[in-house]
Length: 601
Image (cartoon, rainbow, N blue to C red; front, side):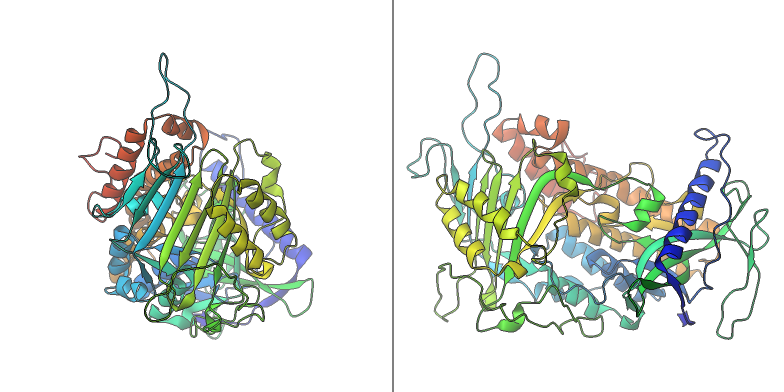
């Protein structure tokens, strides 16, 4: 990757420039689709950009799990793939833990042999699990009452339906449980789940990169535009290719009169990155010239914003969670507001002064004197509240409280709170919600204890958003399909099924295979070869992810599909969950669907 000096640009100029770039690309997209905009014409050519600072085969926007996994897969196959991450350092923490289910493990090993084992080493085997569930009764069927019994919802149910080995004890209607007949309790101490902190997966992926120097933090991808093949497109501005000594060639950029799709060929993409300047109100624009741009920049993807123009969807849910360290292991508690991790040294994370004040909930202690790993989950569909507690090795703990209200004011979506406790008032919103649920279940006392004793700076508060996957294409035809989406940028979903990050790993696996084939043939400069590889990737991923996303939405009862799912009997809901897991865990086999399934064919 070759580099030249960047050119500083003030904020007003940056906004004007990017506005012109996006307007020009929208016009180009309209002009290439005469059915929707027969009289559309490209706008005036945007203002000049700085010359390209970097040249690289594949540019990955976003250094999250999917972006790093793709970089590892491509670099290990000899493809020059660089990651451009907006944050000043790779994020050290998002206060989340996850299970790498079999499809995720298979995808990781497909990306790089043995990678799933490296990730698993950072996890904790949790054998002791307890799930309490109170299901909101569906409307009674005509002429009869509602079916008795309860169904789980989301990740904890999936955890306890997979290979429990008959070790669980369940109680529901008619049982002796003191919680009442409307609660189901399932407990097991077999078939442990390997729970891995999100930050440890991030560190493992960063450490696995063959070329970690190709990770550039502090570079926010804010836009892109096509670079046309030399002499292609009437009116394209001629520009020299920035080499080591600045030798000039001639290339046409997509300017006025360039009708992409009318015979013009796109041979590269200019990716515009914003880098913070040394003075307030000043920043730098850095241009990366690349053969392929991959938008792995999350649910608020700038790449998707320009390509499709839609917005994230608020799922009427808010979550509060925290990942806590042990007083005997303070380094386990990362300071989310001041991470210092880098790709070359991902474990270099500072600890806040209050990181050791991690609550005082009681947990069982094993023979070694450490707390016994356990998972306790509570799902109350009647009140719309749920809580989960996980005790990990080294005294680390995780807790989360979620609130769902489908009559919640949609303007909540624009309320300016999301992230760690730098936003004041997190506990003022959370604690009254927990207290209102105390009469419903004893576990809420533990939730109150954990939330009260956790420093507000270590509580991560978020509104749950998703982005339904486009059903036709994840790539930009204006750029000759050289811009493509993966991960949350393509299909951000509710975490209920536990598949958000794992489908991102599947994306990274499949796209690394498709693009590596292009790289082996030395065909990145050939528009047809790149477009064919991206279309093959889309053929492998779109249908599968549409099904997964719909199931995730149905599990939480969102929208028409969710209401229909929640109206089914308990037996039918559990059947759907089991069929979903069987299909997902067969990856990479049956990638398009399970012919033996009635719901996921």
